[in-house]
Image 1: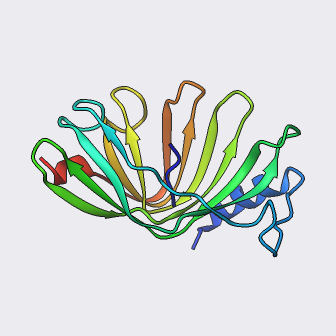
Image 2 (image 1 turned 60 degrees about the horizontal axis):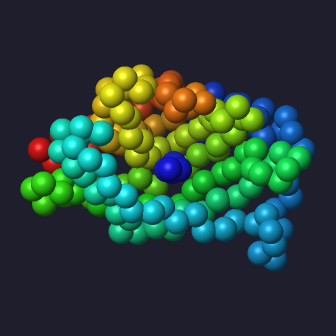
Length: 175
């Protein structure tokens, strides 16, 4: 459920410090194992009450998202990844057919921890879903724009820290 993505001085310092604290993986210029690769965003559905008061369907209309592995754990799994690329998502209220097109083509550096938690350092716009009592934003499908950090706990509780920017619950566009 990875969703993507000018960095301000606060985020630049955080990304640089995080990127430099582990042995980097060198990106191969010839399309090798660690070069930029497509990271397609799958379509998915949420039932009524999960994000909005009604069921929704999210589907990429334009998806040019790609990722680059910056560092790996000893087992070869990603420790840090960068995501960037154009992403336009159609969000549809499947009960009424009302829909809206959302630009979610920001960029993010994601740092994974061994306990299952992760931290996203983001320059939006990016879509994030928040469940009831599952984060620092109310339940909704949120378009977050600007510079911010989202920390996911091992239980998937999301803590949003805005450096600057805006939040908008896309559900309000569809009811």
